[in-house]
Structures are given as structure tokens and as C-alpha cells.
Length: 384
Image (cartoon, rainbow, N blue to C red; front, side, top):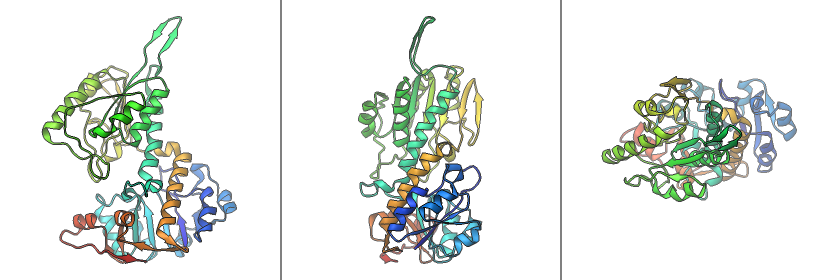
């Protein structure tokens, strides 16, 4: 089996497979081809890939011609699907619950599409969990961006000029990104509070030395460990509580996402207006339109004296380690879905059932098929 590692598009510095993974993949009869320059922005040279045993192709056409599977990070555009070899596999972030046109194009091209953003959050799949590994990098970088933008110190300082109070940081969403942000902000000396609609994370938040903002609402954790939308009454209570804490915060870091949906608006324009001039909001949900009402995806702006960071290249700023973690995830996924160097899928398997979106010219993921082709029935069973 030969996998092709694509060079990502403009603005993306990560790479799906790093040179360190190539030898381990080869040991499992998985050969690697890499597009020339694919790893350069992650500080992985073409020579390092060659040393590991990979083939480096200068031509994207040559790269894809004999590829049994294509690995990349960002989802391809619909117009790019035609470049994929019919019957090959694509392993990438795909967001199939949102990008229906891409799902249809992949099925029409007879591509086996594996959406790494749909890998179930189970103990067995933990080492393949791209969302968690990348959220670790995002949470860390968010705090560094906030610290750089904040015109105040993070830690308490005892100086000859008097005592400097520590910065107050509010983290909205205590998933992997939020918990990493909490830990990073605490290490920098800030006083940290955190809010999440899932009550189960309270202990995790407090174990990192932060205060959990407890609101008397329904527990919004799904069976898969994600957050779901709250009811109207709960949303009102949540907004009132968040407003009080936002007004006192020097930094607000937003990380709340709902799979397949627009990011929930947690910080309104009025809340931003209540913050002290010079304060900072870092919105990690910017690609999904943001948790802050005033976020402008891809931009850093100042509103009411508050710096609003809505950059969508946060992970690219940590390209070396983000790529390393993504590559390790890809190793584990490939080892799981291949046997003797060939792709072997069992669509009744929990992991495959969760992340295989199209196969054999059809949409096989039940939930995606229901949304993209209402009334259709998904195919299940063994596949190769």
C-alpha cells in the first residue's frame, strides 16, 4: 500500500505525516510518497523524508497517480476531488456534517473518505484522536497569544514599585483545548476561572488550580463526551453568569464547539463592552464563526478597547509539534484500518463506522447519509 502526503494549501503550515513516522509505516508494509516541500513549514525537509525511506515527488500528478490513500490535514475543495484516483482513499479533516457538497463529490468519485474529525472518542480510539491532539496545541498557543497582546503581566509580581496583581483569565469550554489553556495560564501565574456546560469537567478544572463557574443548568454532555445545545431557560442563566465573570476578566479564551453546528455565542457585544480597556479575547472557535459575537474570523480587531483575536491559523503557529502529534494519530489510524499493507475496513466496527463517510461510490455513514440524502439507507458490513 502506498500513501501520498499532500502539501497543504496557503496559510497551513502543518503536514499530515512527519519523517519520524515513515520508518514505522514502512515496517507495516505502508510505503510513503511526499509532495516536495510538504514539510518545509513544519521544519521537516525533503532530505529527511528521503532518509526515512519516503519517495519525494515534485509533481502532484505523479504523487497521486499510484497512491492507494491520500493523507492531508485540510479538506480538499470540491474541485480538487477529481485529482484523486478513483477507488483510492482520502484521510483528512472533512467536516461531513457541514460540507455536503464535498461528501457528494467524494462518493461520486468512488473515494473511500475517512473523516478524522469523526473518529469516536473512545478508549480504543484515543491514540487516533486528531481533535484532541490538535486542541492541545491550540489551547497552549491561545494563552501565549493572549499574554503577548495583554498590556499587563500574567503573574503577581512583588516589586520596589509595589505589588502587581495577577491577571484574571476566564476560559469558556473545558475540553482538551480549554484544559490545556487553563494549565498554561496557571503556569504563567494567572488566576483562572473556567465554565463548561458539562458538569463532569468540574473536577478536572479544579485539579488544575482553576475555579469552576457553576451555573444551575441542565448537564449538556452527550454520550460521546461532547457538548450539546442548552434549552432556552438554561441559556439565559448561562449568559447571566458568564456576563458577570467576563466583566472582571483581563483575558477570555473561548473554546466551545458543537460538532456539526455553528459555535455557540457565549460572549455578546455588551459583554465585550463591559470589559476593561486593554483586555483580550482569544476565540479558538473563530473557524466556526466564533463564541464571541464580535469575532471576525481570520482577523485581530479592537472593539470597545478590547483586543479580539479571531485568527484561524493558531495550529499553524505550533506547526512542528502539531504536525508531530497529527502524524502519530495517523500512524495509529493506519495500523488499525490496514492489514498486511492493504486497506481493510469493517463498517460494523465502532471506529470505522464512526469515521468512514463514503465507500464504494456510496455514503455509508448513517448520520451523514441522513443529512445529505434524506430518506436514504446507509450501507453496512465488511469492506476492503
